[in-house]
Amino acid sequence: MRIERISEILEEGKRAFSEAADEASRSETEVRLLGRKSELSEILRGLKDLSPEEKREFGPVVQGARRALEEAAAAAKERLLVEGRDWESERIDVSLPGADDPLGHLHPVTTMIREIEDIFTRLGFEIAEGPELETEFYNFDALNVPADHPARDMQDTFFVESDGFDTRYLLRTHTSPVQVRYMETHTPPFRIIVPGRVFRNESTDASHEHTFHQFESLVVGETGDVTVGHFKHLGETFFSEFFGRHVEVRLRPSYFPFVEPGFEFDISCVLCGGAGCPACKRTGWLEVGGAGMVQQKVFEAAGYPRGKYQGFAWGFGLERLVMMKRRIPDIRLLMSGDLRFIRQF
Ligand code: FA5
View (cartoon, protein in one colour):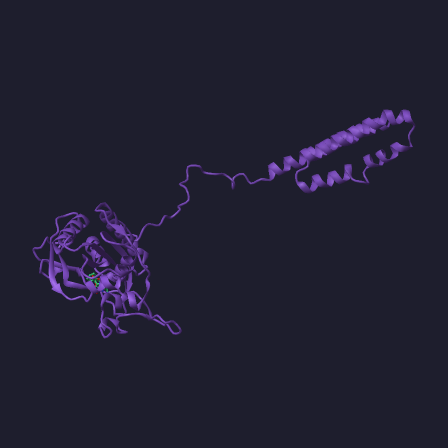
């Protein structure tokens, strides 16, 4: 009798588990057939009251039925889990294009600095740099800029509050202070370029920014070794390479306290080739920077003996070259942070 009842419970249980349509009814079946109050648990509890022979006969059958029902319950759980998934929403379309991972690129000013560094490195130059937060000494005194020179005026220079310091700090107004910093730790002969950011407290327009870049060049050797002819030739070589066409250089007398003689450095207009156009105001020439033979006072400020060395220096505005090369009409676009502009390069 008992044996038959057990196989009935087993058969009914297996069917109930395989027919369970959702987890709630499966779980209800599990409690009903395998829970503490189930008939099977009752029978299991009664085993202890049987004779040893009966235990031997019934024990394995009851235990086997319980295991089989537990397995059926687990199998039903697995089946319902699989059936319950929304396969459609999980479908992956492997033919869809991948997620767009936007890549940035270098700013045209950075690209241009690297290009300039490349050209000069090939010509045997080293690249030097100096601090943007500079002292009044390196920015002006060491460069022989007189104490009453208008460039020191609050209009042109961003002075930094230096109360409590012996030194007066400012944002460098040009890359020339790096000349002296470099010479303090190096002995000629050498040739360097110094690309860097500079700052001027002036009102802005299409060709003037308060923050822009210059690149300085300094070539120094024994007296007689480095001449104006060398730097005119170097300028022609560099600008021709930079613009990818033959460029001529013109020097006009000018004054900078740290050079003697000093020049304005013009190149033949790269747009019209010197014939005259609106970009060069019909002169055929474009002014690109200041230059000259290094003043002996600057050598002295760097600790060199007077008269032993001779060299030239120049300082070019980088943005104006970028504008000419990329045909950008307004310098303020470059640092505007406007991505519509930047993405064009
Ligand atoms: C100087 O800054 C000198 N240190 C250059 C120099 C170096 C002369 C070595 C002799 C020997 P200047 O102030 O002229 O010179 O500036 C040089 C160049 O920087 C200019 O020709 C121009 O191209 C650029 N520049 C000057 N001011 C601005 C500005 N506000 N915005 C953009 N570019 C500027």
